[in-house]
Every structure is written in C-alpha cells, then in structure tokens.
Length: 109
Image (cartoon, rainbow, N blue to C red):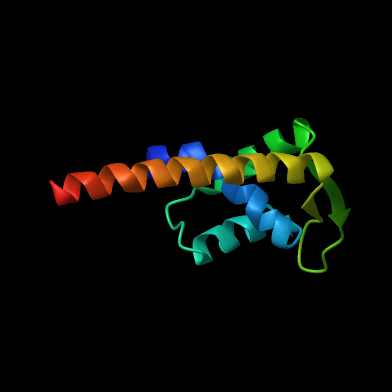
C-alpha cells in the first residue's frame, strides 16, 4: 500500500506529537519522524508543515546559534498547539477504531 496519501492526512498530528515531546529544528523533526517509522516523509513536507503550524499559531519558534553551520530555527508547541494536538488525537483514535472494525469485519467474512 502506498502510504503517501495517508501521511499527508496525518502529518500535522505527527509533527505536533514530535515537538510536544521536545522542541526541534526542521531536520531534527524529520529525523525523529523517520526513527519512529515514518520513513517516507519528505524533508520539504515537514519544513512546510512546521511553517504552516507556526503561522496558524500552534507553534512557537526561536533561533539557536550553531558552531557547525547556520543558526537553527527551533519549534516548540504552545497551548493552542496542545489543544490542536488533543483534538487531533481524539479524532485519530475514533477514526482508527472505525477502520479497525471495518477491517476486522472484512477478515471475519
């Protein structure tokens, strides 16, 4: 199954969950998503999601100087982002339960 379309639908949720655990800069968020098992996530998709969530008021950002190259822009979750994450977690849980029931019914038939 090509999971590209599934990922597009849940990338906001995944990014919010990652930065809830710990603030991170773009590539750090990409790396953590990949290490969690979302291997097919693209760098540009994550960077775009971070910028969009920031513009929507769900994330804060700050710049940290780096000795190894350009400064890094870190993103962290704020109260609005936590509320968004809580809502999306509930939505995901409900959706996953429905899909599980559907798939289990198909397997039993």
